[in-house]
Image (cartoon, rainbow over all chains, first blue to last red; front, side):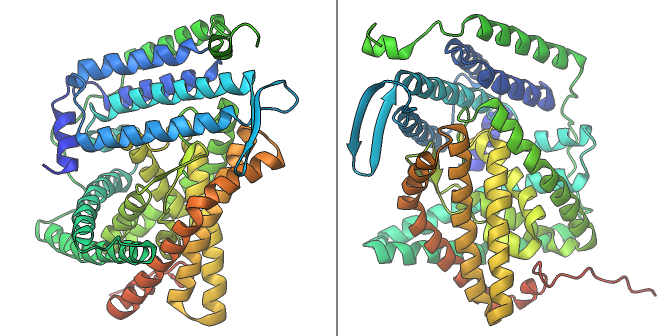
Length: 273
Length: 223
């Protein structure tokens, strides 16, 4: 099954499919914003809990393999980034760790250490909420929902086309990548550069031909410039807005009252900090 | 270069959103007009967007809280201009954030500004200057893609510095760390677009007739 089909199948089988796509999107945005509004370490855990509960309800934590890989990669990037933030502390503050390694001037302070953890928690929590949305909302539903906020038809059409083409190109690239790998195309730096460029040109040329054929095929089917969806997704109502606002305010107040409750530097380095 | 979810403070998220929104709105208007007036280019526009999606998904972790990857915006900025590219980049960045956890929604404004506006603007400048000076399309495309890519990372490093450090040393640190992975990637992207341009000249020269510096709306022919 292709990656796009896996994603679509998962989203169409979600228990949250019948929820208003724009309502879900509004909720996700609100949770992500409140996630970064306070410096409480506990708020990201609340956000993470929301994301995990939604994912459990939506799809029983089923995620396609390629999304799992992307998440693992994203976690790696988050962890490395947080590590760098922890070692670029303000030199006006006392250092926990001060040394030089290669071109890095390592200067870790209690504040930079705490900030790094906070950012890591925020990132992981944000990912869970975004993934809950992605696995419960097919992109065609989202694009149709855009029409409800008077977005021009061309925009919703372009959203669907980019989504479809994006995954088509991704699949084509993977097969070319495997073929090049079998032919020792990545043997050495120069070969790798040549192969990467050739693959990208190959994808571009074949997809350009594919675009021409798709246009002809659509014209043959009396394409009028939009893709009809006969089961329109539910509209966002006042209940969604009120619920989202209530969650936002509650988490914000919780964050304000729990600021400073957890000090990761003290947990790791003891009371001396 | 996508800055991950949670990496920016609310104030900087808001600042970058405010700076990016006018470009995205103008870009949406331009794309809508283009799709209405030139329906035959609809698939090419979608393809340009999908191509940004594809190339910018090839990410390598970078030690700066984001990642290194080709941006793929060189092609669309040369074809459709900065605003249209910012709009396409917005759609792509939203997909990548929610589907692949690459980037984020609160950092969307910052990512649009670096990958959809600043980088392409720099690429376009080089495209126009070199095309006028040399008339060589593949060479101009090479430098447009190369500098679009590199400048995107300069802006990302600047964005990260403003949020975490606010000092010249922090900017140098971020830039140095990006350079390790990004300079080779930018060269690959330049070569890639050089090969594209060569292919287009040989096989689809009509596509290059509508590049942003030569695009003129079709006049309606009265019956």
